[in-house]
Structure formats: structure tokens, C-alpha cells
Amino acid sequence: MLVVAIILGVIYGARGSGTPDPTPTDNASTPAPTGTGVDACLGGPDLTAEQLFTAQQDAAHTPEGAVSYAASFARYVLQIPAPADADQAASWSGLSSEWWSRWADSASTWSGPNPLSVTTINGTYRVQSYTPDEAIITMELPWVIDGAVSSSKTFVPTVTVRWMVAGNWSVVELDSSAADDPATLTDSTEFTGGC
Image (cartoon, rainbow, N blue to C red; front, side, top):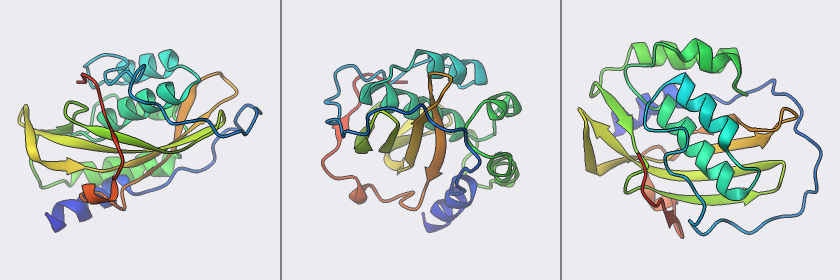
């Protein structure tokens, strides 16, 4: 398990940079969502750049919208083999080209289960912080190995999204320092439904 955590950490531990400025808004803190209104399958079940783009366009400027988009992004990038359309997703994401390059290199050398992805089914999330400009969300997402949802293996990414001038959420950081430690995710909310 430690080897898997290290590999996933390398794949997904890089942090984004060089992101556009978010739209200026009120910085007052907003309460975390309760699960109502979070779309655990925003953009649809397909793990494609088109799904991710649809999710980004449909995510509301609310805590629930931030969680919904973060979950869609995590489902997209946490898949092995890496999606063939990743260049398309990278062209409009808030993460640096260096992040995407390291992600692609690491995914191509992955020696663990293949195919591998994550799901929001039986998953949980916690909003670490939220303002209208930025949200930090930690999720516990079960692995999907050869199409079967694992009852024991999860991935625990923390995703930072910012509200952009273009009028949508964009991922600007994905931290996997707690990659396989769901104990770090206390007081979480279960996703309703999912894909």
C-alpha cells in the first residue's frame, strides 16, 4: 500500500501554478454544503475531457458546485491508463503545463492495477474552506479496479478550486499528501449517488 501511495503521490502531488486571477468577490466565509445540491456525477459518467468540460460549465458558483466540480476533476485525472484526450483538458485547466507533463509521465510508468480509476459511489468529502473566490475540498474516493469498486482501497485527494474571471471553477492545486489515509478525513459528508 505504501508503494501505491508513493506512486499516486508522484502522479498527483504536483501543484499548479500560473493561474488566471479569480473574479473579485466578497471574501466572507460560507457554510459547508450538507450534501443537498452536490452532484456526485456532474458532467456524466464518462471519464473524458468533454465530461470534464461539461462539469466545469455546469458547476454552480456555490459550495456545492465547487464540490461537484472537484469530484469530476478527481475522477478524470485519477485514472490509469491516462486518458488520450488529456491535452484537451490541460489546455483549459488551471494547472500548469508542468503539472500535466509530470502527471502524464508518471501515469505512463504506473505499475499498479490497470485499469484503475476512482468513484464518488460510497465516497465522502469535506469542505476545508470556502469563499466565493476559492474552495478547498478533501475527498475520500474508492478505487475502481477492473470495473469493481473496492471496499477497502481509497484515494484521499485535496483539491483547490478557484472561481475564474470566465465564470467557472478551475482546479489550481491537487494535493495527495494524505493519498491513502482516510483517517485524515473526519467529519465528512457522504456523496449522494455518484459515478
